[in-house]
View 1 (tube, rainbow, N blue to C red):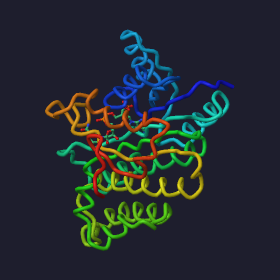
View 2 (tube, rainbow, N blue to C red; view 1 turned 90 degrees about the horizontal axis):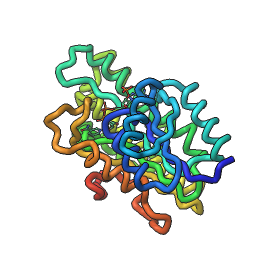
View 3 (tube, rainbow, N blue to C red; view 1 turned 60 degrees about the vertical axis):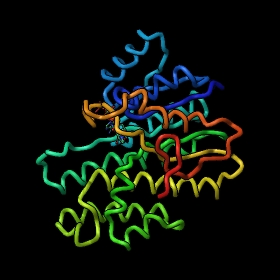
View 4 (cartoon, rainbow, N blue to C red; view 1 turned 180 degrees about the horizontal axis):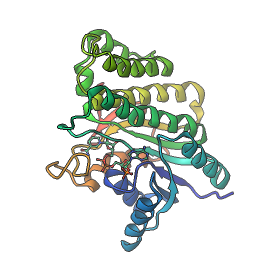
Length: 276
Ligand code: NAP
């Protein structure tokens, strides 16, 4: 088993994830795994970094596929006895003008952004070593979607006692409500992406609390963040930040020094803690 520190970035064959891997290759003192659901796209991305003189390793990971997540888990357990840095970056968004029915958009978006990310956490968080760092890439869209929720939902999502099961129930209810076209009546905003990212931000708050309760002495720091508005296939060419700039806050959180006791359980953008 290798004692080398190891970092894993999900959805990193392009966009912000790719830029996070690039930055970690330069700054993280260990093995950096670029992961992708499609091995061809993943290997191509590794080769691109190699041309820049950077060494990333590759492992397949489709966060929609529990078998794929478990294969990565077993690999990390066997080869490294765990992992030190996990960046949950993989995500999807329908384009604004996409005509796919809203209920389908809700189901597909929540499946990857919330349920897929949660499955990665369920399988990989127990493997995170002491002084590990976990970064969940959410979005400012989570804050604005929170503002568009009913007062009752806002209270639930801001609660310091909400459980992971209760959050899963709420995310499932959103998808069900869109199918019955009652989501607005039920207090939800009209954004599947925004609700999926509420899920990611609230999940991070819950997971940080669980780490406090169950692994206090392990000094693991876990946060959610927004990368900003970044020029990628998701956000398009008009966005204000380059992918490398978008990687800055996630990388800052991934590399918080071992003597840092925060931020933890926070939502950040531009390396600054935001009020939830
Ligand atoms: P992107 O260019 O579309 O890249 C998304 C990445 O996620 C791709 O590598 C994609 O792989 C991967 N992915 C999607 N579904 C996956 C799955 N099931 N399993 C594994 N990987 C999967 O988007 P981006 O702009 O870099 O976004 C990265 C993260 O930042 C997302 O979580 C996004 O919501 C968040 N974000 C972005 C912005 C922005 O302005 N760009 C703003 C706020 C938050 P494929 O190539 O195989 O599709």
